[in-house]
Length: 320
Ligand code: RUB
Image (cartoon, rainbow, N blue to C red; front, side, top):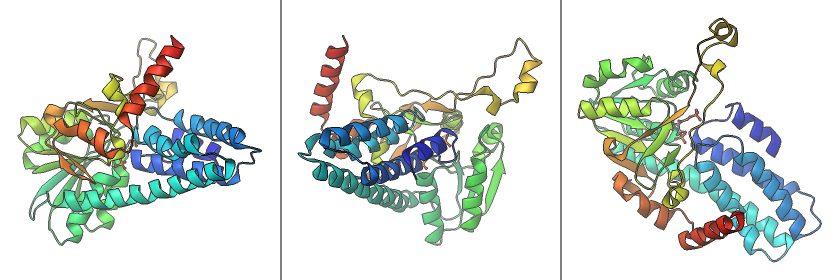
């Protein structure tokens, strides 16, 4: 698929979920690198940077997207000629896609240890990583039930109940506001992440923080399943993760709102769950408490953090 087509699908949420968005963007960059008709290294770099810019501008919250783009574009900086640059990008893209799929599998294996026979699990939104934990546990022969939320306004819960049902797992479907009502029946909550900040806070689908609050009050363990490329290096520099605000007509049709002149519809699609409400973050490198988020950014993300800080300082000096 072309970069334009991929970017449109991500914007319209036909491709959605942080891991899938990252992989789709990387696949589009790889196809672009193969086909880009550039005369020299400078032309190739320019063409690739434009493509990366288009993809990065699609949705602001899932940090997996800039992290994946950064990893795939890194060979451009080191390459000495056009052939080396093209090969480097294609190789980095292959590597990202392979390791991303492997990470989801590994998270499933680790996360499944936290699900026992007879338990009741709750999940919110549609996360490959969280579902990997749940479905792996079912494949291991564990007998448990899952509550899945509806997830207004995008209804991602429908994707989740389809996946759970296909995996043969007894599933209960509830509206988002019923979470607290059922929380006393829940043994463990599993959700995914769009971003994990250096302080261990997790950005995920709107409503996740309310689920976490209800779990905290009921002393129900709250587990986040997140690949290491969901961790946000820029938060070490004090940057906040931007929360995407989508059109209000996803919540209420325009025609209805037009009859309500004093009503403004808000549609933030992610929220922030503080580290204090999170018991564990399961990554492909192992399960960590949220307080160890910095270690993941530093050791496993594949970013040279010193280099990154230097570049950031130079960029700011140039702007100033
Ligand atoms: C999806 C969402 C998911 C995370 C993690 O939001 O919040 O929980 O992206 O998913 P949206 P995964 O539907 O708006 O993209 O584990 O699949 O990366």
